[in-house]
Length: 167
Image (tube, rainbow, N blue to C red; front, side, top):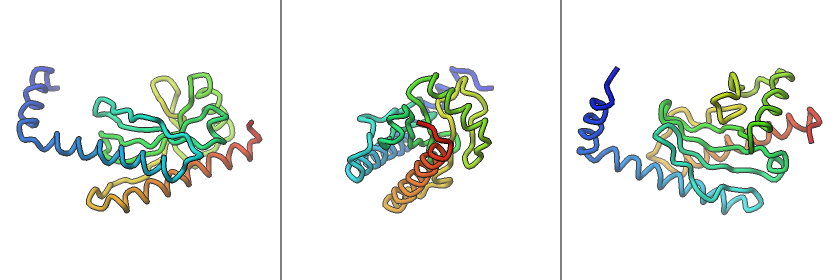
């Protein structure tokens, strides 16, 4: 395993090339545009006012329809750096709400999406891959994929909750 000092030297070498900064800046600009797209197109939904930039582990924003907001559930559009893909997560306002819905999904055997193994150490309840290999050369198509997948995810979560008669 690389030492912290060794890792920092490698980071310095990579930063000197300038590509990492350009890529990160481009990703953040795209994410801000994506958030704005959702805000403008879905004014009845809550869209978080800022991005969570993360520590090069994930970047995300919440996109919450009224039906899930009243349940204190928060879908989030997430870019996961390690897998280099876009995902959608169902998160909650707090650990108590997270636990309630995690148990509900587990008890009902709903396996449409990946249920996180435990709520300890996880922000999500369930997760799904939106875009496995994002094409950053066609941002309009990428936005469309993310939007379509997110709306489908939310629709399926809402249907599950109605079928379970959850208020």
